[in-house]
Length: 329
Image (cartoon, rainbow, N blue to C red; front, side):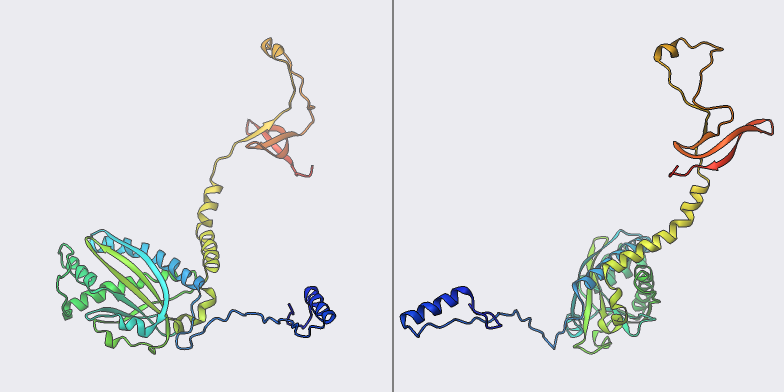
């Protein structure tokens, strides 16, 4: 077969020569074209979040889930379990069309990044939270209804505290100061970006006592575009390791400075037989491999670290360091 440069293979040359020899001019060389795999690109739904970036968002919100679980368990005095279910990219129109009134939508200022993100809390969880705050058992309503002004005020306080907990999980990627701008219970008032804009939708499942529901975070690409290069697990974990080192370094150093370590002085060494050892008596002399004016080995633990000479200090036996042991010695 001929390749793209028009070069014939040996098999094709043999076929042409055989055809000419037999007078058959109908022999043709089949040319093949390289099949290229073409990926269809949808301009109405462009891909702006890679798999690695979505995975990083999952890691961030897994940390957020643990923090919020502890906070809500203590705040509501009921067991709260939160898990990240998925992180995917959709259009904002798909997200807003899935909302059914009444909703609990928190519009969050994501400073210093420009723009806002949206927190979507299932209404059944909203009713359960209100019931717990007012001293109830945490049951939800069997039939949905609009939230009253008092209920909105109570939910705003709870959601505002949840929003404040976003700071710590995001600090390895970007230092943010999130703040709840407003709480909406009607989906029509939550049009923060163009319907065709791409967003990352992070879905969290929540079990509050006996009530189960979800909480979604809608993160527009326009908001996180300046930090997209940081949204990868390699960068996140590298920052996390550096932060852990900086955080625990003073504690570790302080602990090491006050740790007790054994220091011993080796006067000398020798070898004797077991029979000689058994016959040792008071007053016997054991000849060592060192001399009276030799420097003694000073060991820290089992490691030889210094050389020194014996003496007295304030009436007690002492050793004066004369040199430091070098491994190359």
